Image (cartoon, rainbow, N blue to C red):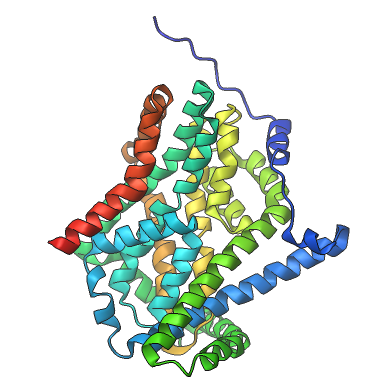
Length: 412
């Protein structure tokens, strides 16, 4: 007998507010005894300070990589010259750090320090895949109720399927034609230097000011490690920079959740279900507000599992989150000047244009647009019947396959 499905109901404002309130959001600054308006001001000041530290940390990584490698940057990453290895490194690093912003910021710093952009491009693509692990793990929390888990797991993995499809399309195109490399190079040249007109003047001015502000702390870190040999000095600076980015991304994410999740929920309710363009736009806006695509998409999982929003309503919203999260790498790129600034901007533009191109192509072609939805619906059904499918998907896509490909490539 065929199962009768209840019709999807329209989202109610109270549903969204109740889901948003169901998560306990406390600022880490409350431990200092701050309350009320004083706490709000301190939160915003801390966000600004966190952005400053993020840019400084990226600068430290770039400087450290240049110090460690000298003129042999290409040789250091020879092991990742295979684009599939670089892709898997991006997947693994992002899955481990649970933050694509960390991966893209570190990559921007490495490119500014001399890492070839051809290696950075698949790494940035891999960041898009790795970041979807967070909301997939969140959906596992609803595993006790079969129907809720089916909806939640489908909503989580539609992001997986979209990003996997985007990489399947654009990695071969990049290997064959250098689409992202060429586009990003033109954009970086256009927005830096002295020949790009008003845009270049504005971007160069921003970069000069930001660089001047962040340089003293970056120089302090470098000077404090001057007693070490160049190789070890560079390695220590890279490790310090990555550690600082991990801490800052976590802190700014927690602060912006406290400050913006209520507003994000209002944007979400206003836009969801009003068409794909509005959904994509709202996903991008909310992600910029909270500075975390993982937070944005994870916010949707309980709403999807409880039936407040349907999979097809959530789908464009998660795609918009891909675009919104690219702002972090762009901010990080402003910590550099001169030739380094052009290289850093190019890496940031690669991440941005990859997500823009993928959205335009996949959503622009109906036969491609439905594939992530169908894949997620199928996986949600089978995983709700047998939870081993869910475990196999998480461990396979984010751990086993990347490690296997890296190992096989290294051996061959």
